[in-house]
Amino acid sequence: MDSCKKTVAVGLSGGVDSALAAWSLKQQGYDVVGITMSMWDNSLPNLPKIEGRSGCFGPNEGESIAAAKSIADRMGIPHYTVPVSAEYSHNVLDYFRSEYRAGRTPNPCVRCNQTIKFGAMLEAARKMGVEFDYFATGHYAKLDFKSADKPFLYRPADSTKDQSYFLSRLSMDKLSTVMFPLGGLLKENVKEMARQLGWDDYANKKESQDFLECGDYSVLFDESDNVPGDFVDIDGKVLGKHRGIVYYTIGQRKGLNIGGQPEPLFVVSIDAKNNRVVLGPRRILQCNQVHATGLNLMVHRDSELLKGNLSAQIRLGHKGAVAHIASLGENDITVDFEEPQFASTPGQILVLYAEDGVVASAVIDK
Image (cartoon, rainbow, N blue to C red):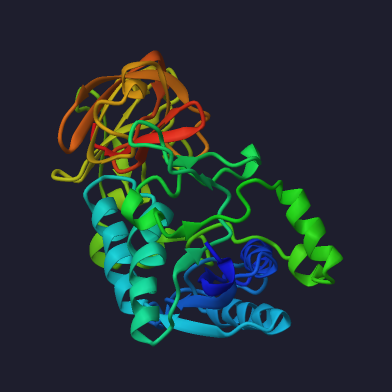
């Protein structure tokens, strides 16, 4: 393949990672264009603007777009702002609200990658007349399309920046024309490369930590969601009052304000139908098995990798636990853990790894 004849659209976020991804591809001889998605639509006037805090969704979005355009100008590449506010509102924000209202805990960043960044944004860019053969981002992950029996999405060289979990809901079809130029690099190397290019302002820039700038999810909900109800124990005994089920998630201990108990209490389940939050001791949250739906199988169903021990990650930050597949349906999966795991939460993403490759992902159901 003659890379000079290929065009790569790079998702520029205004940060150092996407900037270096674009620069490295340009160095390799690709024609590079920058695209940045615009999601903010002023639909949440109560979302506070916090100076110095960055996030994917919020009133400071203009600063990120300006930073993306600035780095594109430095590299001498075209830059386009791609509006996807309607799609983001429906596929991410509405999804987030509906999941919380159902007593589940979603991961909005995984959802955004699945439906917006690697979906709606690319479609919108092409409708704008932006032509490209490949799409690249600054995610830390690797791609390797070997065979149907092997994974195609892998952990990166820098285990501390591993973003394969966030990408686990993407199909082979979507990833077949994607590039992750930073997959073989360490974050410290990326920052040093930026400094050598004279991009100290990007190398020293604080990274986005949340999908909301303010970090307060309650601004996404209205008064109808703030319906107080009962805290109950596992036997149904009323222990106190909660503020509304959208404020709680499985495994939560802080902010319950329930005293006089023989041992610390945690949220062990959320009964959305009856507007109750069930509390119990930590041991109740230990589980040996999880069931998940919306299966995204990333190897062939008959792959030998699915028959052995796997590493199961049940939320972001979970280090992974030894597990094996107990049952594999067309759209669901049941996994048994070798050792009990704490707080497997409905709505979160189950990701299964064989060594460093993702073999499957699904949304935890119970």
